[in-house]
Length: 89
Image (cartoon, rainbow, N blue to C red):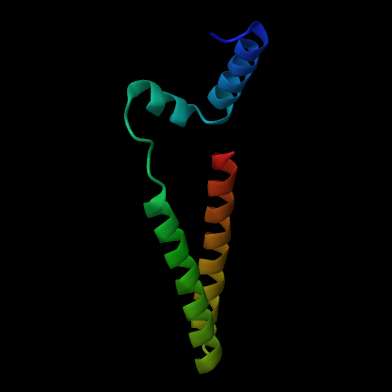
């Protein structure tokens, strides 16, 4: 049996979880596993690697087209990382 103080602290923690990660709370209530973010992580890392590879290739071949593609890929990667971070809370 929990004391009144312990119950109130537990309720505060539960409210914090519900506010900070509603997907996790829904998954725990439904008994289903939480959504995996592994695929998104793999895609973002692949975009980062592609941007670096394009930049190196553009500098090595002095190709403005490859360098421009690298800069666009890097900008897309930064945007994707920021959106993911903003949605994670």
